[in-house]
Image (cartoon, rainbow, N blue to C red; front, side, top):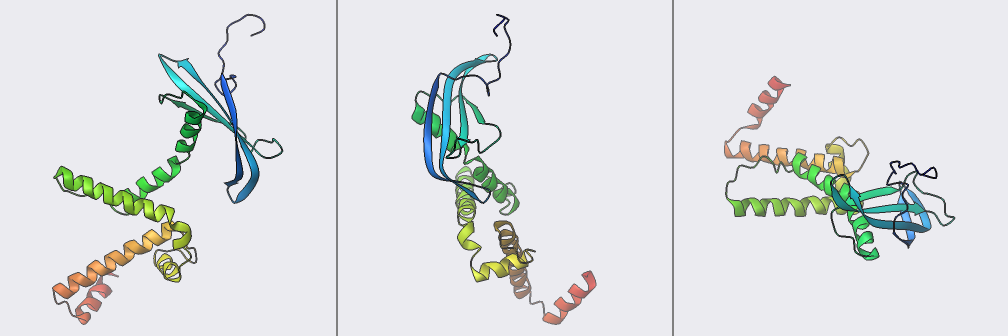
Length: 204
């Protein structure tokens, strides 16, 4: 500091060695669109704790230069940031985190990928690859899926009560899957409709 006393400096406040700007024609956040938004990106190789890391800091500004978020995004990585292009890559990659976590949640909750009992390594790889494909498809296709009339019915089946979202759509598919499985079971075991009605009345 000015008095020549050594003090800790927060990474969010530290001027970093490299700095550049990236302009976006449109930036959307929570239903609001910002025209000509600017990302002010700075990065530096810094010693933190017991090791060296690359720090990337991003501040988003509207076209008038006002911050879109209260605080800048601060990323610390061991990925070598040797250029502005790599710093931008680190930022854009991190923005996919919520989608990745959403796919993981879908795989665990809806597809039960932690419950399969296959022991063959190749078969496990194939199952996981298929799960990722299905999970990523539903996550990315949500805007189009929720506009379909059949999808709206499935969402109501999943407890949507008029809301057509990915969550209720997947819940509805889960109910349909159980319904199909039950139908197959009753058909294979020749369970007559009257017996099924009696069973349902007893459990409800």
